[in-house]
Figure 1 (cartoon, rainbow, N blue to C red):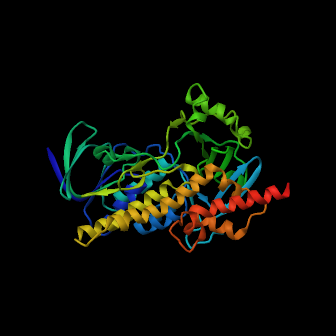
Figure 2 (cartoon, helix red, strand yellow):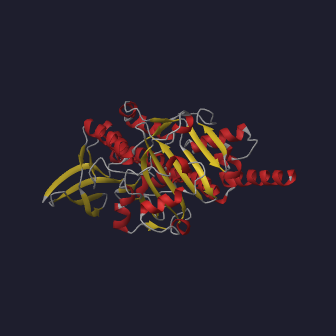
Figure 3 (cartoon, helix red, strand yellow):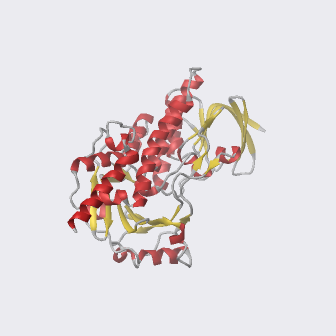
Length: 413
């Protein structure tokens, strides 16, 4: 059987794996990427947040993205019963990028990995990992190619960026209960022939249908738009029929978007995902680290997926280089604890979205601009800035403000 020797094996060619591979290659590390699917391939998660721009830039992948003409995302809109709450990323508390993109992920992900290949990294598509055996810090990975043949890859370290494939988590039995309540989603794309002019037609928008049920609208620069619903599985499963029929029924619940999409054909049969959130018991071990969705996924409501994927991918690459250079690496404090801080902040915002507390703040008729800027920084992904009270005190501050708004409303009645 053919055997290949590399310094680092990256499993998965999505944004997390691309960032890891590009950064490692830029620093002279012999890295190889294996990817189970053929690119381009459909992937959900089309809305980015500004923090990921820093990561693409540091990995040397920003320039190729700048040339693609993707729809600029300048902020986010929320709609409930006709009331609109807007966040402008240029009016945020923390320093950082003021915009990002809304992207068709099939094109976006292929653009990234094509650039990684152009920079000199070996990437094998349609190559499935069938087993991983660890021998101390080294590993021997067996892969199956599209022609049915197998080969071995010996690596000093593995970065698992396999997304929902969760290769190492499944191999080593690391699956864990999610931190967020179990929600599901159903979604597709359309040719948006009734798209409104101006900001209404270019901005990502979340429409609240019920407290725990919401609809997303993500327009792309190519004229297509991603649409989908997220809600408790009980709500999703009450609709019967094919996935197309189910989504058509759900669209009727949207006051804001029903007229725009009531008779628009879908570009493909909708996807249905049950129990979106994912978690693992540990993020690293001798010879490996988990990044992106292969480690943890919260909820799509604030578009944090690609940002955390690239954050973990970049940090994993940096620490891997230190380890290969025989420097001391404390993966717990330098990787897990760091990422946990950001994930915990976002988890709070997701949870308080579904309790309704964050919705009360977003739709308050007299918003405090300072509070709004501090929340906007979190929504932009700058969740490690502890000078921001809405980061430092995230566990209690949203509840406290929501309570004040409730008291204010009661007094005015």
